[in-house]
Amino acid sequence: MHHNLLRAAPLAALALLVACNDEPEVVGGYDDPDAPTNEELAEAARELPPMESGQGIFRCEDNSVVYVTFYVGDTQVAVSTSSEGPKTYLPNAALAAAAEGDNATEPGNAAEPEPAGGPVRFTDGTATVVGNASPIQYGTGGALQECHT
Image 1 (cartoon, rainbow, N blue to C red):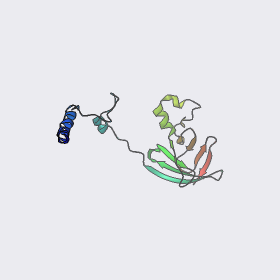
Image 2 (image 1 turned 30 degrees about the vertical axis):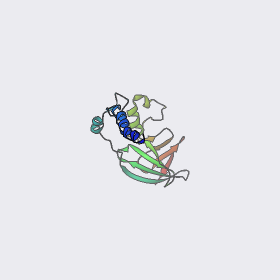
Image 3 (image 1 turned 180 degrees about the vertical axis):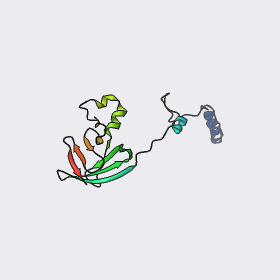
Image 4 (image 1 turned 90 degrees about the vertical axis):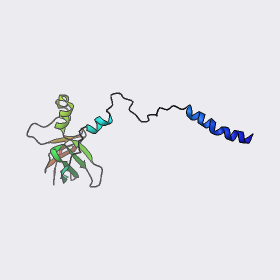
C-alpha cells in the first residue's frame, strides 16, 4: 500500500500542473491605458539638472552668513545658513511664472518677476534671493536685507 501511494504522488503532481494556466502572469504592468510605453519613455527628451555656475558666502546686514550656489542660466539658486547644512532650492521667479502661466504674474503674487533689466529674483514663497552676484538681497518670510561677499 505504501508503494502505491509513492507511485501515485508524481501523477497527482502532474495533474495539478496540467490544470495550471499556460498564460504568463504580468506583474507590475501599467494599470493606466494612457501611460507611456517603454519605447515612448526611451525616446523622451532627457533634461539634465542645471550645472553650478558659482558659489558665494555672503554676510548680511544683521551679521548672519548665507551660503549661495548659483546655477547656469539663472534657473535656480541653492541657499543655506550653514556650510554643511541643508540647502533650500529657490527657482527663478520669472521662469516659474512663465511655466505656470500669466496668473503667477498678477500684482501682489510672491512669484512676481522683476521688470526687464532688473535683478533676477529667486523665491519659493518663503525665502527670497535677489541678484546673482555681490551684493545680493536675502530674506525669509519678510523684508530683504543686503548681503555682501
